[in-house]
Length: 376
Image (cartoon, rainbow, N blue to C red; front, side):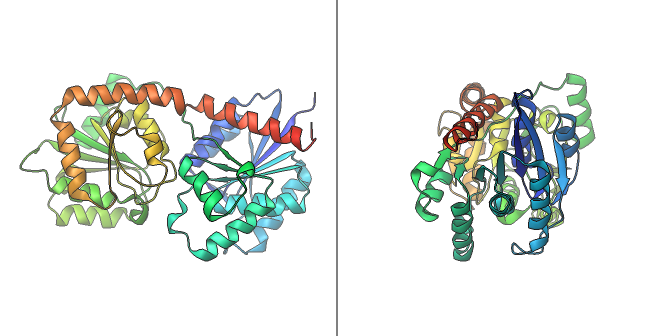
């Protein structure tokens, strides 16, 4: 039996959620049935090595100098002609563009675009271009109900050409006590502190970690034991450190930096918070739910489809640090509620947002589209 060849297209392969879902596909789609390669503009960090170890060949084609830069498209087309995929599957704006253009020029039988971002702040020109790219694709995937709504209502993709496949996360084994004790010592987190945690790239226009720092500054007299643990790095890290200094909470804000393995850090937290202004799905929310943490997050994009209000966590409006502080303080004073929400969160993550379920849904879509287009 000939293997089905799949070519994934992304921009940068780093440590983000989209790359994690590609890793799940590479690890869990049956290798006896599938051969998978990946095209990206560049590969950085440790995740590319994990992809290659799992059997995925990575092709770096050079960064875009604007979305109309022809060089990455030409390089992607060269990969298409050599690999001859049955399916080309693009995610993130640039990845969808690569899949749509190279897929059409290379006559790939099945072209899939996957919208993985919250496009609320996308300009009209971006919507118009994306509509054209979606038109070149044979099928579109939305990673949350909010994204599907965007594709159907704003981009005007016919409903029959769109499939909802909620993101999925692989549950990781917990870290040992010795490792956790070492991390507490390394980052100055007392055993009896109340740790509010967040994980993500420090790009504040999007992630609004500044709202969490402002929220912490409202807590000192009530919860002097509160600490804010920030896991991640990015262009706004220095500005966020300066904000913590200006607000007088720098000693209670821990910048842990980029971590290849974030699992142990969730185990140091009492509450997980995500203050994003825009979020298509929020894979870190599911990681936190697997770690049995109650979640406080903003009511934006696909987040309401992940966090069940009042059951696995609480939702607040974006850019409201006072409201974040109020809700977090309520959970700080209610340990039974935190445990209940954490238990229910893990149950919900296992049922709806596991990597196994995500891979199964993608496999079914691949098989359906290959059959409909008479490829197999």
